[in-house]
Amino acid sequence: MSLALNQWTTRRWSVAEAVDGCVRHGLEAVGLWREKVAEQGLAQSVKLVREAGLRVSSLCRGGFLTAGGLPGEDGRKAFAQALESNRQAIDEAAELSAACLVMVVGGLPGVRPGEPLPANGFTRDLAGARERVAEALAELAPYAGERGVKLALEPLHPIYCPDRAVLSTLGQALDLSLAYPEEQVGVVVDTFHVWWDPRLFEDIERAGRRIASYQVCDYLHPLPADVLLGRGMMGDGVIDFAPITRAVQAAGYTGDVEVEIFNADIWAADPDEVVATMKARYADVVLATS
Amino acid sequence: MSLALNQWTTRRWSVAEAVDGCVRHGLEAVGLWREKVAEQGLAQSVKLVREAGLRVSSLCRGGFLTAGGLPGEDGRKAFAQALESNRQAIDEAAELSAACLVMVVGGLPGVRPGEPLPANGFTRDLAGARERVAEALAELAPYAGERGVKLALEPLHPIYCPDRAVLSTLGQALDLSLAYPEEQVGVVVDTFHVWWDPRLFEDIERAGRRIASYQVCDYLHPLPADVLLGRGMMGDGVIDFAPITRAVQAAGYTGDVEVEIFNADIWAADPDEVVATMKARYADVVLATS
Image (cartoon, rainbow over all chains, first blue to last red; front, side, top):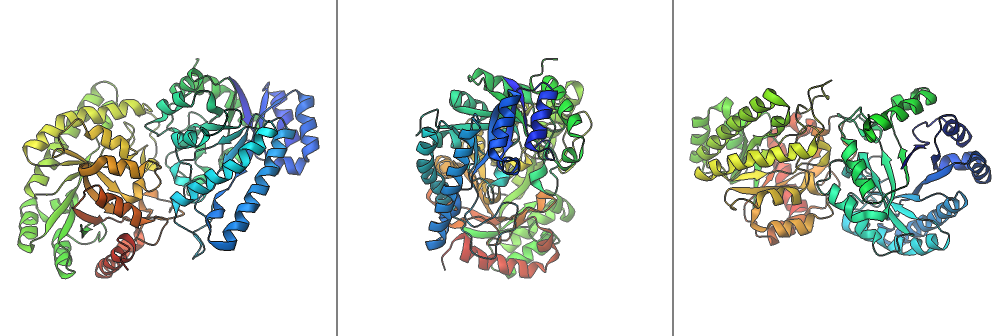
């Protein structure tokens, strides 16, 4: 396993700057975001990472597959649009030779990420939303497989169930993945999202080589008012990383370990200092080798 | 099943006022809090509920059993204190003939509910904290059994794992309960805490008559800055209650259904209006009979 920078951690860096930063700090891999790749241009992004000799540890992100749960024509249109957008994300991941496309599957149909509940036009049918995810996956997994892209289903902390991901546990994501070949569909283990799960260690073992991505950041307590930004540098929160890292390794994961932090203070800091701190904490806290 | 008022929903009401309110609104049961019972006096509280002919659907709350996970003498002292406090809570529940004593088991050792992480003096050993809960339960369950009190283990939403409860899923609470007779240890199904759980329906079925309390309130989205207050009146949030209610009934639960809401707006409102709204929403949303 080796340390990788997810570019959202150094959010103000473009793809070009993140690639330079990785090289400057001796990192071998970078996790990219579609928005940033679009700003840089896909072809230019591909060229930059290749010339720098970097691996693309993930492309973030596909998903948001649940809007099809809205009734009638609205639902059918939303489902078709979600599939189209995801096919495009898969194409981009293929161009970038990304190790996986991270899938944040979406929340309750009609609830937009980070926004209040609409007065109407959303549904509380959680079971139905989960079925829509399975249906979309059946469409997308073969498409991804044909292009050599692995879809990485990311379970999100239950706090994000209303608006971002109805996949709430590693076990649930894993169960969904099992219908597909290992090279088409895997799962993400992100410490922030799964640290509390009483079944975590048995599900990591059960996942084995289905683990497509291991992402680390800490869980701050108390969470800030915008819960999306409750991620912290490893060591600043409540997570005991070393046992999780050992379990992921024991399960057979040999990929990159991305640090992905959504945090207003970290975004405001000097990105080079953030990367330096991240490297130190990775050794001290995540691997606990010191 | 019949509707009960958990007195924290009408937080400014004393035990005497809550008892009067239940009678006035035709409710047959009330869930009491230890703080309120202490203010009213235990003997007086017993007298009030008996004379009013009310059942005490629960006493809230015992628990906070994890501080024993602190190292050395601090841990041993904290563990002994927690046991002592819980024996007292059990005695009170016995006096009140409460249907159960709700157990909020505590978070990471050294992290106080609702407070920031201390600079030091806490531990990230989540697995160890969970073992402390099991150890404490082994002490307390027989004590409760001798007094005819049922301990009701409450899994809390994972957002509360750092500071309030290392029991995070119904399945986990249920597994812990199985070592004891059904009349000594059961589980709480509180919709706010468990609505997102992909294993919810199978674990409700598996729990069967272990369900010692069914509590309802909605999950607001987005959560307020103080996540403790993210509970809403049924119908104001994201939970689809009717399937959960049906599952709890099908599992064999025949007890009271407590409405327990922590919400600044509801606490500021006229308690009689709150109870009237609660009755209407119970019929319309929780039972979905209309």
